[in-house]
Amino acid sequence: DWSSDVCSSDLAVALLGLAHRLPAGNRLLVSSRFEGYDHAFLPGFGHYEILEFDEKEIRQFLDSWYSYEPDKKKELVDELLGAIQQSGIAPIAGNPLMLTMIASIHQEETRLPKARVLLYEKLMELLLDTWRDKLPKDPDLLEFERSNKEAILSHAAYTWQSKAAPEEGERPGALVIPQNDWIEEFASYLQ
Image 1 (cartoon, rainbow, N blue to C red):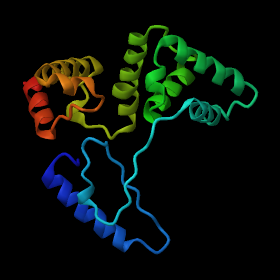
Image 2: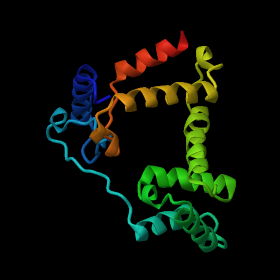
Image 3: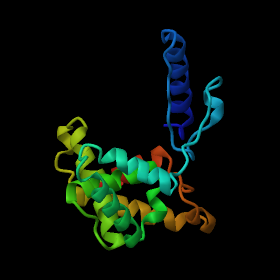
Image 4: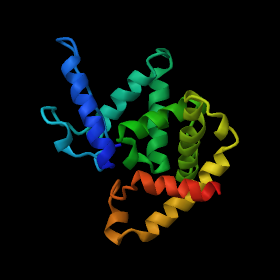
């Protein structure tokens, strides 16, 4: 967690140590959200930013995504590209993570929801349910279902967005919530 100075410095020391122990020819790639990262923590590392995909790169990504369906690939890619344009989500489709999630939904559902709000609901479902299944199970959290997660995230988002300066709410990724604030919010909700 780059946003926490203690964690950041401990993590940086660990990563630098690992980098020095790697056999020759190996590389270490570290990724982080842009807003929470400080270049000074990893001296000697190259620093790169992942850029948004343009229309051609979105098509290339989707061609690769549907390469397992060679007979239907063109039809699936064209269908998904059309759905992206019609649903009004084209501005977020250039983000590689968002495009991956959109393609996952399209692959599972065979089409995207027509309304943008319904697509966002599916994206949240993917994050809160589907990816959760890939994580280790914690018996203490088994009853913490999606409705609980939605409630706490909605409350937290509203609370922090209403406290943010107007200019922070206008820039994507501008509102960074410190880890301790999240912990306090979850603890308060669980009580």
